[in-house]
Image (cartoon, rainbow, N blue to C red; front, side, top):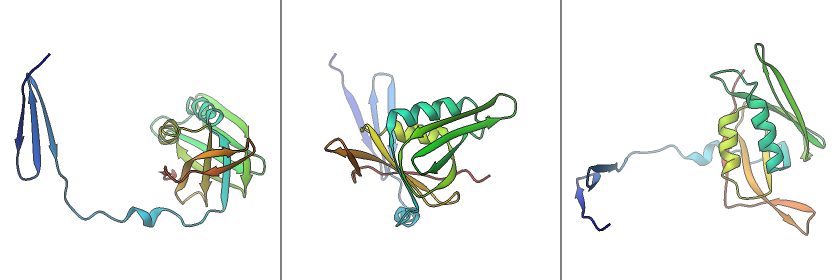
Length: 165
């Protein structure tokens, strides 16, 4: 239906009014830290993983993560990654996924943040990179060339900070 929308401006705000709905938006000003400083320049571990397999394993492990912590352990080793979670009251989950892995290492992540990143990627495979259990890890979309080798797409980057145990 046609209806009138009222728009009001202030110094750093705008208000939209439509019938009995009001939306207010405010411009946030300030100096923000340079996010590029937390993105590692190189990685000791790189894994190319089928996205759906990783998402299923994380969802399964999430059922056994600790309440309020939402922790899942990702262990990268030659030829596979292992997604696991342990809850003393519920039991444990451990899933191994075949993957192309360079290097080895373990990191603990919040499964909600990991699934948010995976759900935002429009690709059949993802590139998961990390250095150690205390550094941020990166999740990117991957493209397959000639059905064989995957490479990183540079148009999307998802940073996940680890949970320190």
